[in-house]
Image 1 (tube, one colour):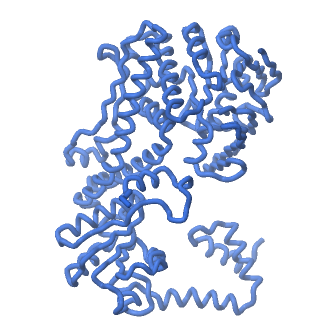
Image 2: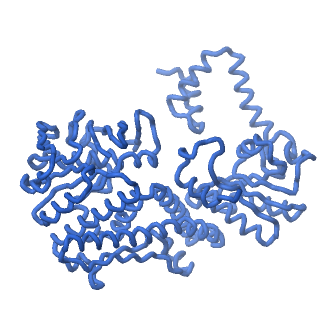
Length: 197
Length: 357
């Protein structure tokens, strides 16, 4: 029988996304084997993230300062807003270092099957930012799946009356990859979006 | 392409261990219930991960066995590839590999192409509109591999829209959110309609040519495709709590002088029409893919016009590998005019295999 404190830890770990029973017990035994200081660091990091990190009041990004580091950076172009579904999408775009604008996190995508409607994603916050400030362009970077596409269409409709320029990320082939590895839908999207050179 | 070897584990009543096949024709004989059709099922399953007789994969599992496994060696362009499908019942899991490497379904199903004729395929004429849409979709998928993904995308968008209609009817969601889903659903529906329209056009043309070539007496059949793309008032859809227009309601009819074929033709004539349609599908596949698929012919019976079947088979390119079963051995004579292998199946095992030149 597993000792109750160990069983408890395993049970807590299985609540994490992508962690099943086997992974959870491997993680738990690993933690048990390592020095106390590592366990304390892990526990402290978990507590810190819950007590010190919150949503930016402007863009919904996860932050420990208000407003977040991106919104408060004077070098960034506050007139261009990139709209993403989740806060972790920001880091993907940030890694490119190419985008100089600011973000808006919707906190989800429309999905009637999951009961997620327009009132559950933060489009109002986006509209308010457009009304309040001088926004020139909104780039919609929701996921290229069914839910992300419907969300993009919905946002585009909501923005129409504001007159602000609204764009959607392009779909196409991954750069650096081989054509032969492209799936069929991506390939036809890429054909659709071809351009003259 | 050629299926060179096949192995099955707990696949219905079969126990096939590394069985080799003839590159041209394989006649599978044995008493009823010994596993003749199951052998064809195993080949079909290896190629498609589905059953050709039912839409329920569950029926392929052996009683009291939680999993099943089929593997085979396929030769294509002088290269051998090892394919395998493993499936578990509860929870439903599927593992597909090519050369021992895990691959996604979309890649896997392109590795081996089969066409199957069996009397259950009469559903194409007699069954529900859904059976006929499936007949179309499988044909399109065989010549344009991206179609499956487009169909999946459409079905997902439709499911979302239907859930929303349900919520709106229940007063749980405002109706203005429908606009976005309408656009998404119609964008996803467009390639489905285009694919179906084009395929029906090509299939009718080829079907007519084949029927004319064999001077079959039933030669006025028309394939009529009616896409469900009308405009439905939103209120009606909200009351119905479901989408009332779209590819999920498309109709494909087989008609003679405006009447359904199933009401006009005899059972034997219907079987011949389904057979001609199957050969038309194979012809379209060959033209598009520049390759020969496997052809599974289940349960050749007296209702089929065996002279025509023999001629149809003779006109297939010699690289087409055929697998045929019949409850009566003499019906397999149609395949005995060329080199072939005769496999005797008893109690799920191949007990003898003999080649004839």
